[in-house]
Structure formats: structure tokens, C-alpha cells
Length: 399
Image 1 (cartoon, rainbow, N blue to C red):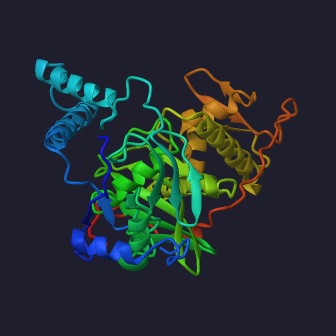
Image 2 (cartoon, rainbow, N blue to C red):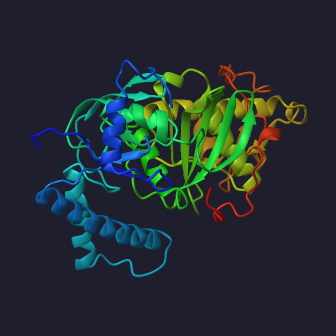
């Protein structure tokens, strides 16, 4: 639309319940001179919209319902249950979802190149961050210069007055929802179930999409668990990084993101360590979801090599010449295919008759001068992790 007017906000669940008129009066009381540059948005920009916008909104909701049905059907087929034939109805549903994706809508399939970046930068807490990629935020304009995102509840607006009013009066959250499972020094990690905090997790995915090119999950969050790493100070917990994990999946990580303003602090590697510690406690070898981003592949290969070489440095392994990949998988918690991909390029993997793979001890293999990766900036201390796999995929309460 070409006409511009003040954005309308609707109270979120648990909000103050102010009407639009109340908010208009409140926003007039606060100008940029009166408000500090950073305090701590609980209202989501939707707008009443024209008849055409309402029609599109109804169509979008209808396609969302179809998307969920198709997604459930695909998961059932992938699990080996049900009819796997591609019927005319299934083909029609798939085609509708692909068509929606081509117009920058929702869905898990991005068959064409992603849309152009629609947000130039975001104001998030005390940082103004340059965005990298397109994210399907619901905005009146196709492209905006600056989006204001509350770092506590993740609600957003392009109106600075509404943003400051929200920070000053409305947002009561000082840390993410969910359960605190890890705390060490100035680092906290929260576990948030998408089924219990749907709208919060959707907004978290929209934020992550600004910095992850290949991320497709933004709205279908019910089957995912999110782990948020926060830096803490006197003002509360500030989101720095996150990863998601699909429930009832052998993958221990679906996607991972560190905000640009918190990079080079070791937070991404710390979350990778967390995902593998959880795999160990759940007693299954972990592996991340594919495909990798370029940076993700480099990070994981460095992590795997460091863990494997550190394991061979342990006293019990110093005099052991070889170990099978299957045994190594059970001992370190890394999937055997990832072990093969890590050790084969450096000449420490051999294939024996009968399909057995063995890994040679790099300490005893004189022919291979293995370059050891640098240790992680931050090490996860398992004693600070208050988490167990009991009821892992069965959330019981709302926070």
C-alpha cells in the first residue's frame, strides 16, 4: 500500500489490554527527547487492513492449514507408515505450497532463490544490527530501513514511539520463557518448547531467518524445542545465540544461529557442545541436520576433530593402537558417519574385510602429522547442566 498511517497493535496474550486509543495517547507522551536510547514491545504490528488485505489473510490461513496437513502426511510417510503413493490431492496440496513460497509466503519448500532482503537493520536491545537475509515478518511495507525488536519478548514494530512506549510501560519479561537448564558465569541457557510458547518461538525464528540464508522453518514450531543462550548482566538476560532441535528425531540439532553482535565469543561452539552432551545423556549418537551452511560445516568438522583427538589423548587410550568406528561412536557420542568423514581425509581411517572401519591412534601413527584445531573459547561444564532426557519430548507445563 502506498498510503502511510500509524501501525495498529493488538495486545498479546498476557498483555496489559490497552486499546488502540490508549496506546495513541501513551505514545504521544513519549518523544525521543524524553525517553532513554535503550530501556527494555509486546504488541505485534498487524493493522486492520483493506478488504483485499483481509482476503489475502484468509487465504494465507487456509494455506497454512493445508501446509500443516501436508507436513504431517510427509512425516508419516518418512516414518514408513501409511500410503506412500502420490495422489492427485497430495500433488495439488504440494503445488499450492510451492506457489505460496514463490510469493514470499510460508512453507518448508524453497524451490527458487530466496526473496531480496526486506529489512536493512534491526534495533535489538542496545545494538543496531545489519541484517543479512530476507525474513517473512508481517509488515505493511515491502522493505523498511529499520525494525525495532524487543529483546525480551521479541515483538516488533517499525514505529519508534510505539517501541519506546512498550519498553517503558508494557514489557514485563526480563528473560526468555521456558526452563533455565544451564548457568555458568554470565551465560544462561533456556529450554523452550515450541508447543508451549508458539508465538514467542515463531518470532524467534523470524529473527534467526535474518541471519540464516537456508532456514525455512518460521511458523510450524510445535514440533521443535529451542535452546537460547543468553548473556546476563544487571539488566537481565540478553539473547546471544540459539539452536533448535526437532522432537522425536535422531538429529540433535536442526539449525543454529549466533547474532552478529555476539559472534567470536565461542557461543556457537558452546551450543554444539550442549547438543552432544544431551545426546550422551539420552544415550544415542548425535548428528546435526543436513544440509550444512558453509560456516556450519567448518565449525562442525573442527569440533569433531578436536573431540576425537582429545579422546585419544586420554590416559586410557594413549597405548591403544586402533579402535573400531562403532566403539568410538559409543564412547564419544558422535555419529559414526561423522567420525568417518572427519578421520578419513587425514589418513586415520582404514576399512577391513566384513565392513568394519577402524580409526588409528594419531599419537602412535608416525606417518600422519595431524594439525590439531584450537580448543574452544568456552567449554561446557556438564556439572552446571540441569537436564535429563526423562520426558524430553513430552512437555508438561506452560511457563
